[in-house]
Every structure is written in structure tokens, then in C-alpha cells.
Amino acid sequence: MKPAQKSTQKSVTITKKSKAFTEEERAAIRDRVEDLKADEAEGESLVLAKIAGMREPDRTMSKRIHTIIKESVPALTPRLWYGMPAYAKDDKVVCFFQPGQKFKTRYATFGFSDKANLDEGLMWPNAFAVKGLTAAEEARIATLVKKAVS
Image (cartoon, rainbow, N blue to C red; front, side, top):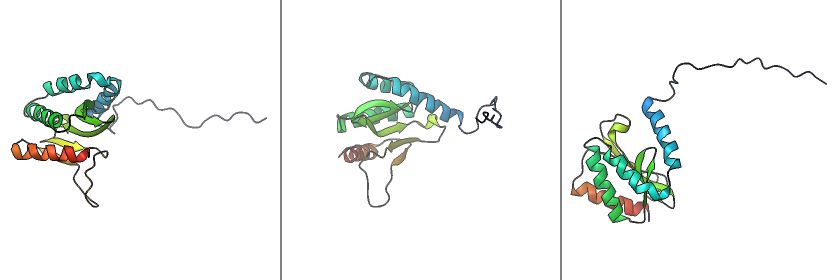
């Protein structure tokens, strides 16, 4: 019998914060863990609480987008996704609102996951910068969300 060989690799203790993720990205990962613990029944109340905690103008835009989605496609279930308001069909996120403050960007984002049925040829948009909402943007969001779940 051969004697067991010892590994030549030394274990490394990391004392500094990893540079692989920003603080905002680490927060999003923590948010995702919390999202997974949430019950589907509490999804809408969690989304509304998250919206209420946003700074302006993200709060107003997110409230309006929430209403547009609920009116346009009531079958979508509100839930949190990486700590952001999101809307799911059959427990799969279809679209989401990312406030500008989430990653310190100059605009909010309204986006779609790969579960959204928005394919147009070989290339199509799946996220939109949002700095404000007029009737035209609201109508476009409603149309896109309806198409996404078709």
C-alpha cells in the first residue's frame, strides 16, 4: 500500500474584500438569496414595499410601471428578483424594473429576461433606459409586456 500523499497547495485566507464584485453587486446577490426565501403569496406586498423604499424619480416610474403591467397582463405575478420589482409567468421572470440607484447609473432600466417572447430576427432589444414616462412610453411598455407573454 502506498502512503497517502500530502497536498503541496497551501490554503489561503482572504482578509480583504474580493475585487470580483462591487458592493452593489454583492448587495444584489444578497437580495437574490432573500428573494428565493420569499413566499409567492407575499410577492406583491414585497414588490410594493421595495417600490416605496426607492428614491425619486425611480419610485414614481416603478409605481406606474407596476400599474401598467397589472392592467395589461394581470396573469403576471409580481415578485422580487435580485431585489428588484419583477413580474413572472409560471414562476419564470419575464420583465423587471431596475432603479438607477441599484447600480448607481444615471437612468432606471426596464428589461426582459430570456423568457420574454420578444424575438425579432437575429437581434432585438431586451432592456430600455427609462428617465421618465409619458403616455407614449407607457403605451410601449404595455405593448411589449403583452407581446412578451404571448
